[in-house]
Image (tube, rainbow, N blue to C red; front, side, top):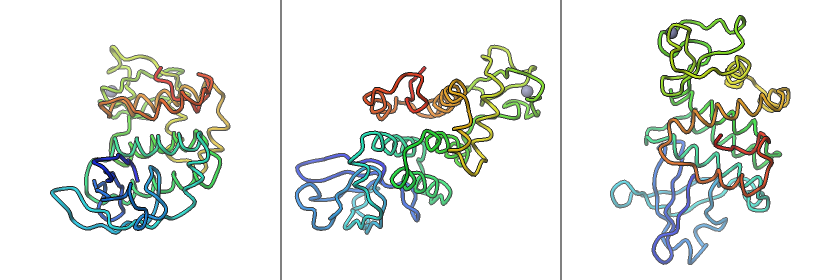
Length: 251
Ligand SMILES: [Zn+2]
């Protein structure tokens, strides 16, 4: 459940990410009046089995929803809620098609499950950002030049020219006008795409490294999303210090 919005007197408009039909819009009629067909409620980040019927136009009708997992854990903890809301909003913003996408579905499903079952950790957010962009073919070039695809000599330089508008990292030939980014940041982002244990990897980074990886990931997301992400405000409301890797400032 990526998005939940009240409409009319008693209905909810939903954006669902489904395994079989990709991202769909659905209406849950009467959901705010009666919880009979939706005993676990309908909330952002909920995982479960949806019974859907084709409705009007592109909007499906949600007839039943059977929850999986303890969604209550999200509601009881503001920090956990902020993490889950952010993952859902990033997914909603980046995934557009109604074609099923097993990898994108598994990424989001696993991330939410992990955030419910385990302590929220910024590595979950960074993994989702980078891996979702990657699976959708939108990830910035990191180890090769975005223009000419030449492998970059990362071990020999301390900074790499980088420009999200041109697709990411750039070789010296194509670097004009791009800003320099620490090679360590680029390498950490490239590692985050492939490591098996993102938490341990992020814990091994210094605080400035985590901050620059976060800023790189956020800039990559914002490059593909037209509007500002609402859930960034949740993090601000948690009053995390600005250099905390969990607080995704827009800097
Ligand atoms: Zn180049």
